[in-house]
Length: 94
Image 1 (cartoon, one colour):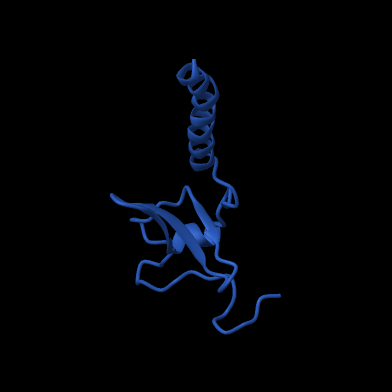
Image 2 (cartoon, rainbow, N blue to C red):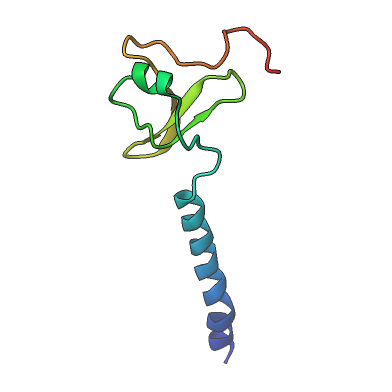
């Protein structure tokens, strides 16, 4: 009796935890829907431009890099390796 009660109570909780994690990964929040044309022209071609946002700390664009082990955000760079930013380095945020 006790085991069946654990299954009926614990089972849905376990499934709900999995569903929440999956939904959070597939619903990107804070990404830029459409990058400016100037950014598209200077961005290096090897970067994933489908998930880009602006880092609030330095004002630079970062993109989501999905690696073998982890997913992380890397600076969006030009073809010659310079970061693409919305403000000059050292300029305080608004």
